[in-house]
Figure 1 (cartoon, rainbow, N blue to C red):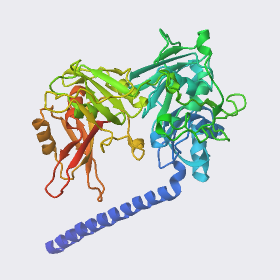
Figure 2: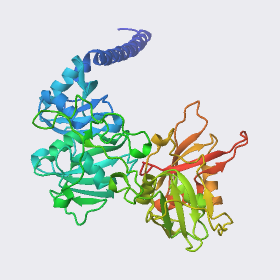
Figure 3: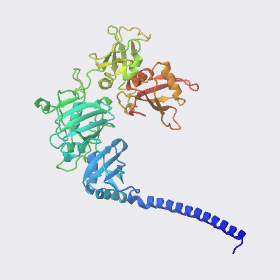
Length: 520
């Protein structure tokens, strides 16, 4: 028998010893976990960071000019490729192989040695998806679909049937083209038989013009296009007279059509490298894909236009304006999103009508495309190309709000399409989300709500400020409105509104434009 005090001492010791043992075991298990993570990072690159093997490979580190054909050419040696999804703005892509073993060979080779795509090393990993989801119910070339769906991302310049013909036809002869505006700017291009696969390989992920108008190509649902008329948005090339177009000698490309003529840079660079990345085999794609070089005509005839479809005048006419609320500045606030504005003039003989002289006919084309038929301050606008070639400041009068009927904006610092900043402009149709920038660092949600109230415009429903760099002197962010109409009204009234702050002598000019985001 052991005395009571001894038993209590032994029990206390055992409890303390168990506690110390649990503590040591926890530290030991944590150490093992850390070691396993380190070993996984150091040695386990081969198992693709513990992601389960998948037939889909995630490719990173691609250069800007990579197209689908580059991926097929570089990775086809690992196995049959079923599908490719390009993510050009992220410099990434998803490649689906026919089996896990082929994908495994690709990932394993990529971790052991450099695998180059378009002469640049790429990085590979298993995807968390077992299959790339197709946007339509037609699967790849095996389906025999001969119609491609083209989505044009960042459409800085007008897209017409002639533009797409000059892009798509050199690969394989185009049968029909239909352009529509559903989710941004999209088009369907029909090819004969199964030749659509060649065009998809050569063009998916490419830029029509340098740095913009990027093509994202999928197979479309219909197997044939129905074209009712030949114009800017649709064309049937099976008609005999439509096949007699000037083809000329093309230049080689990196961006398919090089710099857009309205940039003023010219087309001095080759459009396709000599060692063409679009050449997969001598049987599939010609050694050099050549594209017609078409520049705006310099004659004074009304037909002088880019590819035959750009506006023939640099003056736009808009009617249906609110007689009491619209003025020259508010028209400028809208039109400056699509090109430099030179002059604005209201017509005294036709109330609610104004002429807008833009920097060139391409700006007029963009303005007509995106502003026609939108509702501004309760009135539906009608925007078209004017027959006049310039705006003459005559018969000036006073508008209902006391401002002049004519204003010259040629020297305005708020024009956004100057050589130094034109590449940063993203042409967007009207949307319910506005992007604001050049705002003072003290800007708040309350201040913006006050601005909306003071100028009798609809208030936004959601507000977001982007994280600014420590050295930044301005703020930018997003404003979401209940509808597109409310956002258009706010932009028309508040764009370029000066905001004064106590600690600065010059006001901040609040700048607004339509955002690429559909919602916050």
